[in-house]
Image (cartoon, rainbow, N blue to C red; front, side, top):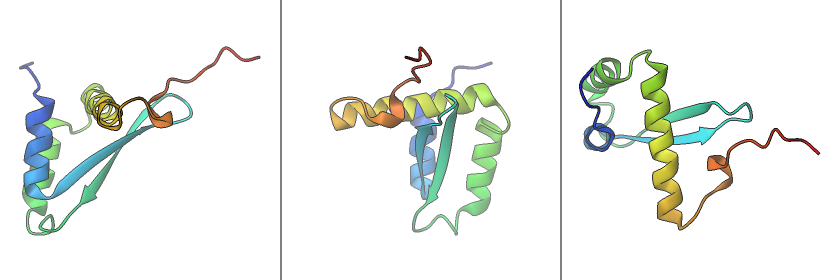
Length: 92
């Protein structure tokens, strides 16, 4: 598998009118949300092609992108946010 450039992938999506955000769910899994901006409708087929050829059903790649988004968001905000914090299963 070739090297996956997450920043280039995100830049391509942004150029096509899609922004991604990610959250960490209560069970520790990562979820990506795709936000379609102005112009995304005109690029719908290209967006779908890019997503399917790059991410598709590959959960590992999905998790890589989500983790990158969470890390980038935390750096931009100057710290961590609650969505980026790992679960504490230690209990009382």
